Picture (spheres, rainbow over the protein chains, first blue to last red):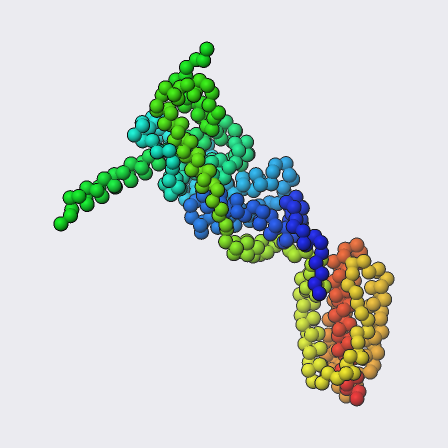
Length: 214
Length: 226
C-alpha cells in the first residue's frame, strides 16, 4: 500500500512552493508553473498573436524564472517578478524580429514618421461606432510597436494597474499612463483604417455586383 | 464658477489620466465639443474591447510542462525529493558509476543462481540473515552491527559452499568485493557526514544489497549440498 504524506495531499501555497523550488524540488516547480502558466501564456499569446510562438515564449519565461528563482528574496510580488521576466522575453523576441535594437523608451515613444499617434483626431465620420470588433482589435494590436503593445495588453487586456506596469516595464507610473493613451490613440487610427478599407471593399463589391451581372 | 477648457487641455488630461475620472469642467467641454466627445467615446470602446478580450480563458497545452520539465532536468535545476524515492533509486541516483555496474552484476548472479533450480518450499527457510529497516533515525550502532552480522554470515556461506563448484565461489567473491567496496564508500560518507540522512540511506541500501547477495548464496549453497 502506498502511504501518502499529508504534505503531498495539500497543495503547496505559493510561498511554500517558492521556498522549496529554491532547493530544486520538482513538485514545487510544477506547482509554481500551474499557478501562473495561464496568465503568462495569455500574455505571450496576446503579445505575439501566434500559439506556437506563445508556447515557446512561455517556456522561455518559466525557464528564466526557474534559473533565477534562487535569487528571489520577496522584495516584490512574485507574480510581478514573473511577468516582468515574461514581458522582457517577449520584447526581446519582438525586437529581434523587427531587427530594431531599440531601448524601451524608443520602442514606446516612436516618432511621427515611425507610425506614432498623430495629433489630429478623427472627425465624426471616423467614429468607431461604439463597439470594436475583436478580430480587428487583435489585428490592430499586432501592428502596434512592441512598447505600446506591452502596455495595452498589460493594462487593458490583462488588467494590471499602472503601478504594477511601472515595475514590470521599469518606467514611471506617469509614463505608463501616457504610453497607454498613445497606444489607444494608435489603435484608434489602425481601427479606423481597417474600417475604411472594409467600407471601400464593400463599395467595390456592390459596384461589381450591380454592374457585372449578365 | 467653473472655467471652460479647450480641446488641447482635454487631450493633455487624457494623457495624464487615460481612464478618467472626468472632472466637471471636462464633462462640460465634452457636452459642447463633438470631436472630443467622439474621441472619449472611442477610447472607451477600445478599453471595453480590451477588457472583453482579457476575459477569454486561454489554456497552454499540457505538453508545455513536460517539455519545460525535461529542459529543467537536463540543466540539473530540479530533482525529485529524496524522501519520496525508494532506497534503491536513491542509491543508484547518487552512487558512483562502478556501483551501478556492480549491482547489475550482482543481480545477474542472483538471477543465474536461482534460474537453475526449482524454487522449493525450503527456499523460504533461507531468509535474509538480517531484515533491514531503512530509516534515517536508525542509530549508528545498529549500522555497525548490521555490517558485522553480514560479514559473519557471509563467512559461513563461503565455508559451506561445495568445493566442487569453484566458478560459483569465484563469482560470489567477485560480486561480494564490489558490494563491499560500495559499503566502504558509503561508510566513509556517513563518517564524513554523520547527520546526513541520505548518506545513511545509501549505507543501508548497500547493506541490503549485500544481504540479498547473501540470501541468494545461502539458497545456492543449500541446494548444492543436497
